Amino acid sequence: MQKVMNYISVFLLALRTILYAKPKPTPPDLRDGTVLAPPWYVIAFREIGVKEYPVGDNGKIIEYHQYTSLKAKDQKTSWCASFVCWCFEQAGVESTNSAWAKSYLNWGVKLDRPKLGCVVVLSRGPVSGHVGFFVDDTAKGIVLLSGNTANSVCISTFDSSRVLGYRWPSERR
Image (cartoon, rainbow, N blue to C red; front, side):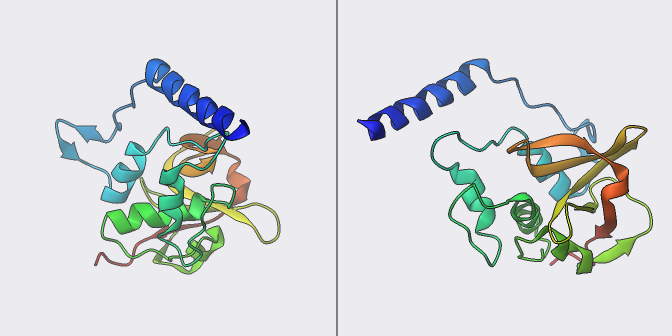
């Protein structure tokens, strides 16, 4: 009976998402079909709205995990780095293949200043971190497009004091 209730719950959530979903925004960097942002950023932008399921696991998040050496099988495992790896690999750019956010501190080329789509690594305690793609720097903080923020892929603002580094791919495959 519990299994049936879980399936009904997932079905109702999916139905609600379909009926009340807001259309995905158009990236501000796509004008008249001309792509002004790096391809991995455009790929990431198209993932906005992917969320963890309240019951069960979202297959898309599991797919992100498969692009890391960890290859986690659930959405409870932190997935911000998995999301970044997936985006890079989809764009033909070699990622760290690591589920550890801070692995990006030793990847690619260090940037002194952020630019649209660069990797931003944030602190989160002494060992953990968070990683995402640079969108903007505002008076309120640094704006990132990242996974596993509020259990979803979204654009959020973080305290700029948490920035550990900005990185850019050294080359495409």
